[in-house]
Amino acid sequence: MKKLNPIHLAIVGHPIKHSLSPLMHSTAAREAGFADDEFSYEKFDVEPQDLATFMRRFRDGPLAGLNVTIPHKMAVMDFLDKIDPTAKTIGAVNTVVKSGDILTGYNTDAYGLIKSVKEIGGIQDLAGKKIFIYGAGGSARAVVSGFIAENVASLTIANRTQNRAVELLSRLAPSAKTIAMGYNDHKTLVESVATADIIVNTTSVGMAGGGDPSGLPPGVEALHEGQTVVDIVYNPLTTAFLATARAKGAGTVDGLWMLIYQGAKAFEIWTGRQFPVMKAREVLLAELGEG
Ligand code: ATR
Image (cartoon, rainbow, N blue to C red; front, side, top):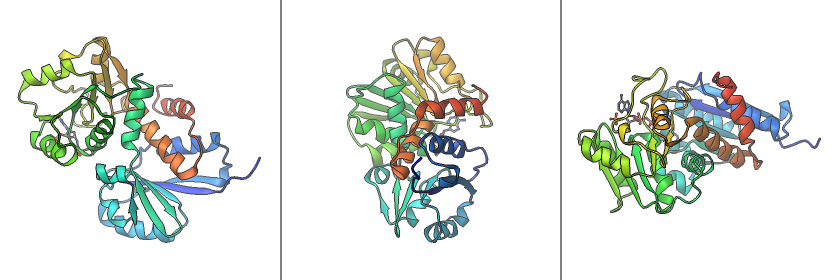
């Protein structure tokens, strides 16, 4: 078989021990035809105060690209030469490419979410859809940017801390079709959930090992058939939120899809090769004990 240009990559974050990205990308590389000595993907646990040193070594070292995860997605931007417009809008980078001396930052999270909704949720055309999003943290920024770029009809963000939702929208999507709310006005929140076409949880509620693994966001009683409900949490694969949505007849998209599609885009940026989505899904499900 023809030798491919070797490529060596890594993910940097803190903590990083449980990251599924090394398994996902090494599986993809094998499927894409890279021999074992042509591809590697390491993980580096780097604390915030050590990011500058890590990035200096990356610049001078043999790695050709990085994934960047919590808590470095914003901070890493200070150490790059170029930032892709999508990443600039979101204000965070999750993928870095080194080409010669130039480090370029990309963000594939918005792509990952939108692709999941289209391919798995079966909604190819998002124009005119009503979107409801829980949460106003870093993940919500990518999700909001993704939907706004698809020309949705309206977008509501509800967050426990209302101010963060207000600030996120005023910076990212100041428009008459966006609304920020807190969790206190339950009646309005329930109405917004009931009238949405697509509902996305971007908070850590429902995450194993998080503060509230069996927790549900407010207003889930309004979910119903005909809606598409997305969780970005993938551990557990079926969160309490998704289980509730399913019981109410809504369609669901689990968080592993977003992880896979953001990885697919990063892989294509680094290697120029197609990413085997279904194979990655199979391997990751087995790793999570869901295979
Ligand atoms: P990330 O980058 O993963 O989005 P983050 O920026 O820390 O992480 O944001 C976490 C999100 O989960 C926030 O919207 C947070 O709400 P607050 O802004 O009110 O903190 C939300 N969140 C976390 N734990 C929560 C809980 N127990 N109940 C409700 N919302 C919670």
